[in-house]
Amino acid sequence: MKQNLRIIGANWKLHPTKLADAEDLFLAVKDAAARARNTSTIIFPPALYLEAVTALYSGTKIGFGAQNIFWEQEGSYTGEISAAQLKDLNVGYTLVGHSERRWLGETNEQTNKKIHAALEQKRSVMLCVGEDERDDDGEYLAALREEVTTGLRDIPKAKLKQIMLAYEPRWAIGGDAETAPSEQMIQEMTIFIRKTLVELFEKQTAMQIPILYGGSVEVENAASIMQEGGVDGLLIGHASREPESFTQIIKAIDKL
Ligand code: PGA
Image (cartoon, rainbow, N blue to C red; front, side, top):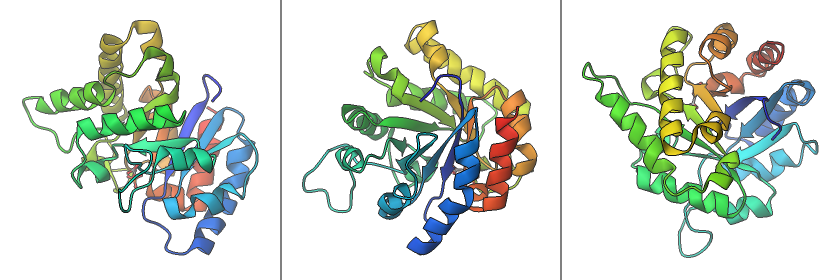
Protein backbone atom coordinates (compact mmCIF):
# COMPACT_ATOMS: atom_id res chain seq x y z
CA MET A 1 0.00 0.00 0.00
CA LYS A 2 1.23 3.50 -0.88
CA GLN A 3 2.68 5.46 2.03
CA ASN A 4 0.63 8.25 3.62
CA LEU A 5 -2.66 6.99 2.30
CA ARG A 6 -5.61 7.27 4.63
CA ILE A 7 -7.03 3.86 5.31
CA ILE A 8 -10.67 2.95 5.69
CA GLY A 9 -11.55 -0.58 6.73
CA ALA A 10 -15.08 -1.93 6.29
CA ASN A 11 -15.81 -4.72 8.76
CA TRP A 12 -19.03 -6.35 7.63
CA LYS A 13 -18.94 -8.89 10.49
CA LEU A 14 -21.60 -11.61 10.09
CA HIS A 15 -23.57 -9.66 7.49
CA PRO A 16 -25.28 -10.04 5.11
CA THR A 17 -26.84 -13.51 5.04
CA LYS A 18 -27.14 -13.67 1.27
CA LEU A 19 -24.29 -13.67 -1.21
CA ALA A 20 -26.30 -11.53 -3.63
CA ASP A 21 -26.69 -8.87 -0.92
CA ALA A 22 -22.93 -8.91 -0.26
CA GLU A 23 -22.26 -8.38 -3.95
CA ASP A 24 -24.82 -5.57 -4.12
CA LEU A 25 -23.32 -3.89 -1.08
CA PHE A 26 -19.85 -3.99 -2.58
CA LEU A 27 -21.07 -2.70 -5.93
CA ALA A 28 -22.85 0.16 -4.16
CA VAL A 29 -19.61 1.44 -2.57
CA LYS A 30 -17.10 0.35 -5.18
CA ASP A 31 -16.99 3.52 -7.27
CA ALA A 32 -16.52 5.88 -4.34
CA ALA A 33 -13.76 3.65 -2.95
CA ALA A 34 -12.05 3.20 -6.30
CA ARG A 35 -12.16 6.93 -7.10
CA ALA A 36 -10.73 8.14 -3.81
CA ARG A 37 -7.30 9.61 -4.46
CA ASN A 38 -5.83 9.74 -0.98
CA THR A 39 -7.70 6.94 0.66
CA SER A 40 -7.33 3.22 0.42
CA THR A 41 -10.34 1.10 1.32
CA ILE A 42 -10.13 -2.44 2.63
CA ILE A 43 -13.30 -4.52 2.67
CA PHE A 44 -13.62 -7.35 5.20
CA PRO A 45 -16.63 -9.41 4.10
CA PRO A 46 -17.56 -12.75 5.65
CA ALA A 47 -14.92 -15.29 4.53
CA LEU A 48 -17.50 -17.30 2.64
CA TYR A 49 -18.10 -14.33 0.31
CA LEU A 50 -14.51 -13.22 -0.18
CA GLU A 51 -13.96 -14.93 -3.49
CA ALA A 52 -17.16 -13.63 -5.07
CA VAL A 53 -16.69 -10.08 -3.80
CA THR A 54 -13.04 -9.83 -4.85
CA ALA A 55 -14.05 -11.02 -8.33
CA LEU A 56 -16.07 -7.82 -8.74
CA TYR A 57 -12.98 -5.61 -8.71
CA SER A 58 -9.69 -5.72 -10.53
CA GLY A 59 -7.96 -2.44 -9.61
CA THR A 60 -5.47 -1.70 -6.84
CA LYS A 61 -7.32 0.98 -4.86
CA ILE A 62 -9.51 -1.44 -2.91
CA GLY A 63 -8.08 -4.24 -0.80
CA PHE A 64 -9.90 -7.23 0.63
CA GLY A 65 -9.40 -9.08 3.86
CA ALA A 66 -10.64 -11.85 6.10
CA GLN A 67 -12.06 -11.02 9.52
CA ASN A 68 -10.01 -13.72 11.20
CA ILE A 69 -7.55 -16.50 10.35
CA PHE A 70 -6.10 -19.53 12.08
CA TRP A 71 -2.43 -19.80 13.05
CA GLU A 72 -1.72 -22.96 11.07
CA GLN A 73 -1.69 -22.99 7.28
CA GLU A 74 -3.42 -26.36 6.87
CA GLY A 75 -4.28 -29.50 8.77
CA SER A 76 -6.94 -31.01 10.97
CA TYR A 77 -8.53 -27.77 12.17
CA THR A 78 -12.24 -28.03 11.48
CA GLY A 79 -13.90 -24.76 10.63
CA GLU A 80 -10.79 -22.63 10.36
CA ILE A 81 -9.41 -20.67 7.42
CA SER A 82 -5.74 -20.00 6.80
CA ALA A 83 -3.41 -17.35 5.46
CA ALA A 84 -2.26 -19.81 2.80
CA GLN A 85 -5.84 -19.97 1.54
CA LEU A 86 -6.08 -16.16 1.54
CA LYS A 87 -2.90 -16.02 -0.50
CA ASP A 88 -4.29 -18.50 -3.00
CA LEU A 89 -7.39 -16.31 -3.46
CA ASN A 90 -5.22 -13.21 -3.68
CA VAL A 91 -6.80 -11.75 -0.54
CA GLY A 92 -4.23 -9.35 0.85
CA TYR A 93 -5.37 -8.61 4.38
CA THR A 94 -6.76 -10.03 7.56
CA LEU A 95 -8.09 -8.59 10.79
CA VAL A 96 -6.59 -10.19 13.87
CA GLY A 97 -7.70 -9.85 17.46
CA HIS A 98 -10.99 -8.07 16.89
CA SER A 99 -12.69 -7.60 20.25
CA GLU A 100 -15.54 -9.84 19.11
CA ARG A 101 -12.94 -12.61 18.63
CA ARG A 102 -11.29 -11.85 21.96
CA TRP A 103 -14.72 -12.00 23.58
CA LEU A 104 -14.96 -15.57 22.25
CA GLY A 105 -11.74 -16.38 24.04
CA GLU A 106 -8.91 -15.33 21.74
CA THR A 107 -5.76 -14.56 23.72
CA ASN A 108 -2.82 -12.27 23.00
CA GLU A 109 -0.65 -15.35 22.39
CA GLN A 110 -3.11 -16.50 19.76
CA THR A 111 -3.24 -13.12 18.03
CA ASN A 112 0.55 -13.25 17.91
CA LYS A 113 0.56 -16.68 16.29
CA LYS A 114 -2.04 -15.56 13.77
CA ILE A 115 0.03 -12.53 12.84
CA HIS A 116 3.09 -14.70 12.27
CA ALA A 117 1.00 -17.05 10.12
CA ALA A 118 -0.28 -14.13 8.02
CA LEU A 119 3.19 -12.64 7.55
CA GLU A 120 4.55 -16.03 6.54
CA GLN A 121 2.16 -15.87 3.57
CA LYS A 122 2.92 -12.18 2.94
CA ARG A 123 -0.59 -11.09 3.98
CA SER A 124 -1.03 -7.73 5.73
CA VAL A 125 -2.57 -7.57 9.17
CA MET A 126 -4.85 -5.13 10.93
CA LEU A 127 -4.31 -5.93 14.61
CA CYS A 128 -7.26 -4.74 16.70
CA VAL A 129 -6.59 -3.67 20.26
CA GLY A 130 -8.67 -1.87 22.85
CA GLU A 131 -9.95 -2.12 26.39
CA ASP A 132 -13.26 -3.78 27.32
CA GLU A 133 -13.99 -1.05 29.82
CA ARG A 134 -12.17 1.64 31.73
CA ASP A 135 -11.24 1.53 35.40
CA ASP A 136 -10.24 4.49 37.56
CA ASP A 137 -6.78 3.08 38.29
CA GLY A 138 -5.77 3.00 34.64
CA GLU A 139 -5.31 -0.76 34.55
CA TYR A 140 -6.91 -0.76 31.14
CA LEU A 141 -3.77 0.94 29.84
CA ALA A 142 -1.62 -1.98 30.99
CA ALA A 143 -4.00 -4.40 29.28
CA LEU A 144 -3.87 -2.39 26.07
CA ARG A 145 -0.09 -2.28 26.19
CA GLU A 146 -0.04 -6.04 26.65
CA GLU A 147 -2.25 -6.51 23.59
CA VAL A 148 0.20 -4.51 21.50
CA THR A 149 3.37 -5.99 23.00
CA THR A 150 2.40 -9.65 23.00
CA GLY A 151 0.50 -9.33 19.73
CA LEU A 152 3.61 -8.04 17.97
CA ARG A 153 6.13 -10.26 19.78
CA ASP A 154 9.03 -11.40 17.57
CA ILE A 155 7.77 -9.64 14.48
CA PRO A 156 10.90 -8.73 12.51
CA LYS A 157 11.30 -5.06 11.78
CA ALA A 158 11.39 -5.71 8.05
CA LYS A 159 7.86 -7.08 8.20
CA LEU A 160 6.29 -4.19 10.05
CA LYS A 161 5.27 -2.64 6.74
CA GLN A 162 2.58 -5.30 6.66
CA ILE A 163 1.13 -4.33 10.04
CA MET A 164 -1.54 -1.79 10.96
CA LEU A 165 -3.15 -1.30 14.34
CA ALA A 166 -6.76 -0.43 15.00
CA TYR A 167 -7.66 1.01 18.39
CA GLU A 168 -11.19 -0.18 19.08
CA PRO A 169 -12.41 0.16 22.65
CA ARG A 170 -15.02 -2.54 23.09
CA TRP A 171 -17.36 -0.22 24.97
CA ALA A 172 -17.54 2.04 21.92
CA ILE A 173 -18.41 -0.62 19.36
CA GLY A 174 -21.85 -0.83 17.80
CA GLY A 175 -23.28 2.43 19.13
CA ASP A 176 -23.79 5.81 17.51
CA ALA A 177 -21.80 9.04 17.41
CA GLU A 178 -22.70 9.63 21.09
CA THR A 179 -21.09 6.33 22.06
CA ALA A 180 -17.73 7.06 20.44
CA PRO A 181 -14.98 8.46 22.66
CA SER A 182 -14.16 12.14 22.29
CA GLU A 183 -11.57 13.07 19.69
CA GLN A 184 -9.25 14.05 22.52
CA MET A 185 -9.60 10.64 24.14
CA ILE A 186 -8.84 9.00 20.81
CA GLN A 187 -5.80 11.20 20.39
CA GLU A 188 -4.52 10.26 23.86
CA MET A 189 -4.92 6.58 23.10
CA THR A 190 -3.25 6.94 19.71
CA ILE A 191 -0.28 8.57 21.43
CA PHE A 192 -0.22 5.82 24.05
CA ILE A 193 -0.18 3.12 21.36
CA ARG A 194 2.45 5.01 19.36
CA LYS A 195 4.67 5.26 22.47
CA THR A 196 4.31 1.55 23.05
CA LEU A 197 5.35 0.91 19.44
CA VAL A 198 8.36 3.20 19.83
CA GLU A 199 9.45 1.20 22.89
CA LEU A 200 9.13 -2.05 20.93
CA PHE A 201 10.74 -0.96 17.69
CA GLU A 202 12.88 2.06 17.09
CA LYS A 203 11.24 5.38 16.52
CA GLN A 204 11.48 5.74 12.77
CA THR A 205 9.98 2.31 12.18
CA ALA A 206 7.30 2.75 14.82
CA MET A 207 6.17 6.04 13.30
CA GLN A 208 5.44 4.30 10.00
CA ILE A 209 2.89 1.88 11.46
CA PRO A 210 -0.62 3.13 10.70
CA ILE A 211 -2.94 3.44 13.69
CA LEU A 212 -6.66 3.43 12.93
CA TYR A 213 -9.63 4.09 15.15
CA GLY A 214 -12.81 2.02 15.18
CA GLY A 215 -16.03 1.99 17.20
CA SER A 216 -19.20 3.93 16.35
CA VAL A 217 -17.69 5.82 13.45
CA GLU A 218 -20.51 7.59 11.64
CA VAL A 219 -20.86 10.17 8.90
CA GLU A 220 -21.01 12.93 11.51
CA ASN A 221 -17.83 12.07 13.43
CA ALA A 222 -15.58 10.43 10.81
CA ALA A 223 -13.76 13.55 9.63
CA SER A 224 -13.25 15.04 13.09
CA ILE A 225 -11.91 11.73 14.44
CA MET A 226 -9.41 11.65 11.58
CA GLN A 227 -8.38 15.24 12.05
CA GLU A 228 -8.38 15.61 15.81
CA GLY A 229 -7.84 12.01 16.85
CA GLY A 230 -4.46 11.84 15.15
CA VAL A 231 -5.24 8.54 13.45
CA ASP A 232 -4.25 7.30 10.00
CA GLY A 233 -7.58 5.73 9.24
CA LEU A 234 -10.86 4.29 10.44
CA LEU A 235 -12.22 0.78 10.89
CA ILE A 236 -15.94 0.95 10.36
CA GLY A 237 -18.58 -1.62 11.29
CA HIS A 238 -22.28 -0.92 10.88
CA ALA A 239 -21.86 2.31 8.89
CA SER A 240 -19.84 0.38 6.30
CA ARG A 241 -22.94 -1.64 5.51
CA GLU A 242 -25.00 1.44 4.74
CA PRO A 243 -23.79 2.34 1.24
CA GLU A 244 -24.83 5.95 1.46
CA SER A 245 -23.12 6.53 4.80
CA PHE A 246 -20.03 4.63 3.80
CA THR A 247 -19.72 6.52 0.52
CA GLN A 248 -20.08 9.84 2.34
CA ILE A 249 -17.42 8.83 4.85
CA ILE A 250 -14.97 7.87 2.10
CA LYS A 251 -15.53 11.17 0.32
CA ALA A 252 -15.22 13.22 3.51
CA ILE A 253 -11.98 11.51 4.53
CA ASP A 254 -10.54 11.67 1.06
CA LYS A 255 -10.84 15.43 0.81
CA LEU A 256 -9.36 16.24 4.22
P1 PGA B 1 -19.00 -0.29 14.67
O1 PGA B 1 -17.97 -1.52 14.66
O2 PGA B 1 -18.51 0.69 13.64
O3 PGA B 1 -20.30 -0.92 14.30
O4 PGA B 1 -18.99 0.28 16.04
C1 PGA B 1 -16.60 -1.34 14.48
C2 PGA B 1 -15.89 -2.66 14.59
O5 PGA B 1 -16.31 -3.53 15.39
O6 PGA B 1 -14.90 -2.90 13.88
